[in-house]
Image (cartoon, rainbow, N blue to C red; front, top):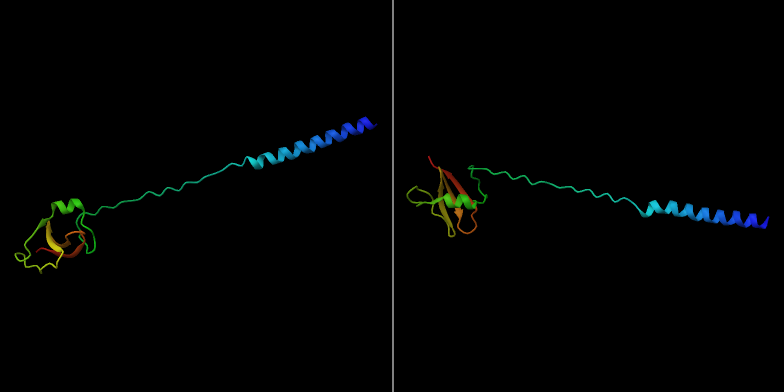
Length: 107
């Protein structure tokens, strides 16, 4: 009787140890889910339609022709600015920054 009792006790101890290991295993092996949100930047390029405060791009600067403001009866540009003509528009542009300060359409 003592042998049977000791064998049953040993089996129950082993069974509980195995059950606790089986229940602990899924907690240690958790699946990690990583979501990546990638935002694509949409770039809109507008041709013409000059607006005060907009920066003149390098390609626009290369095709812009400097003009004599007196010939076209434009106001004198302040220091650091100059008048340029692109197609049918006169733009008062900062020399170093390229920011448009004033826009006048030729008639």
